[in-house]
Image 1 (cartoon, protein in one colour):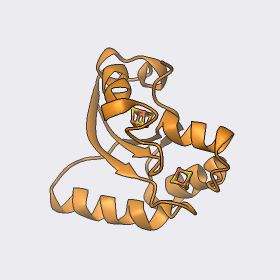
Image 2 (cartoon, rainbow, N blue to C red):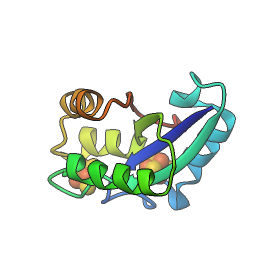
Image 3 (cartoon, rainbow, N blue to C red):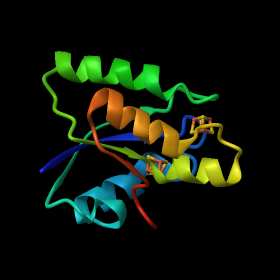
Image 4 (cartoon, rainbow, N blue to C red):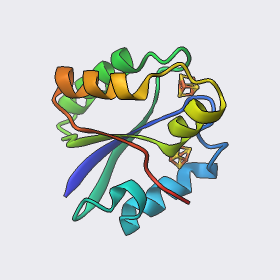
Length: 117
Ligand code: SF4
Ligand code: SF4
């Protein structure tokens, strides 16, 4: 079982995919980037911290809360919405760089992307 936190684009979450049904569907069916897990539990979804992409302080806060609430986070996924924002909306997040930083500083593996619908 992988306990997954999804990081979403503050600007287009729930607009790009209404109600985030796509990520929940993909997680349940293990589609897209969730295919590598035996089972997926979405622990939480958080925004990216908004432009210009304050991901690290936002994740620090999320991990503190998860610790307080005794919720494990085994993996972090950047939602497909963040990928779309990078490709089409001049998102300032450097996904490769920030993924390495998260893994190094927080010890949690990062995947870029979620569903492919
Ligand atoms: S990619 Fe996932 S988190 Fe982002 S808007 Fe779509 S369903 Fe929501
Ligand atoms: S930093 Fe990127 S992912 Fe975050 S709100 Fe801005 S465009 Fe969206």
